[in-house]
Image 1 (cartoon, rainbow, N blue to C red):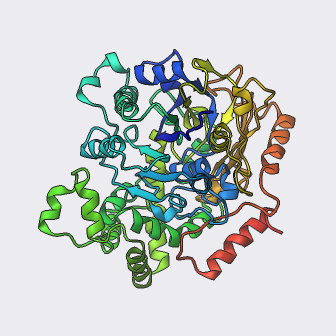
Image 2 (cartoon, rainbow, N blue to C red):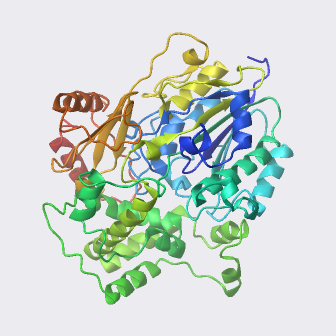
Length: 533
């Protein structure tokens, strides 16, 4: 390793499927990523626990699965404070730590812990907008004090996908997602051209994405929940609509009040009539609108303006945690928990329908949890190495410290292991990847495990949820569910998954706003599952 400590650039591409960034059988064109791969190391089979942004970032920064870091879903959770984070460890060793974040990972999720500067921006700020120009200016002009660790979260692949005009043709991809990949690849060139040679760069994804190429089949967990909750019927307000009305922080606070009730709900045990009328929709809208911030007339002209929108929202208090906590608490007192829960359940059904198109949150097939991992460190790592072995998202942080020769503090990365020995040609073997979909509601919860050969998932709280087992060596597209023909293997893999849960049971990190009785009910549910003594 060089005597001078390198700068560290961690680029996280939201919704990045590995098979669209690395490999031959793809219609996207990524000359920049191809060059970085040729000059560095690639691990194209890197598995995330969930197809969900917030838990993925918590795993990325702690080397822990959700059973240890406590973030089980997109919103309503906060990373537990007693688990060391990658930026905290790096700060102990003289690094300055920065983050450029967007989407659901607002600071209130705890993902900001350890960063000296955590810049949150709205999801309208992309690399090709004014925000990208300002970010690159900070990068080029030394506004990040060296040696720095910089995590950059890019949102271009998320719907609505960003495709620059020059990439919007079949030449750059057979579908919008692939063209968005090609378009974003060109922006990576701008970033890499703004960093010094003394930079260790890692590029990965938080989770994958579904395209029209994948179809949910009869008899699967998704098909079961779709029918049980009448997902194809009338639905409520989209969470995205609510977020645009009240802001991401207020939505997180609202979720903190309502998430436990949603997790406890079961359509099997308490069937619910999902009749939905225009009046119901209007009432839901007016209820959420009570949390909407007061805007001035001039604010309306910048609602989709990059950079200016984020600044305006900060000025109006939309991103202020304490202010939103008080506003949501008043709404709960005024409207009532039961009525808000009815609205929230309708929002969940709508979100499930949307996620069936994108794949997020609802399952853990390979196209949803297999992400690229490229390590680029000229002069330190040999170029052009591609490893077919399975790595995991929780392995990224310990690998980074291993490459730097840094020994982590006690308690860091309880689930991850470095792939450093593999890169150095030393003996190394992959560990199984824990898989999960949060218990929201508990009927839909999925736990499981992925090994280099198999993927197995089951319903930890719902025996009626179809078990799914796939042999990835002979069926990489996961079309043939062989669970029924292999009960012994299913039991073996289920036992392996359950052993990955810590001895004291899975941990749940909550945003503030839960009553003591709600916390007790969560613990009771975990005890019923045998996870808590």
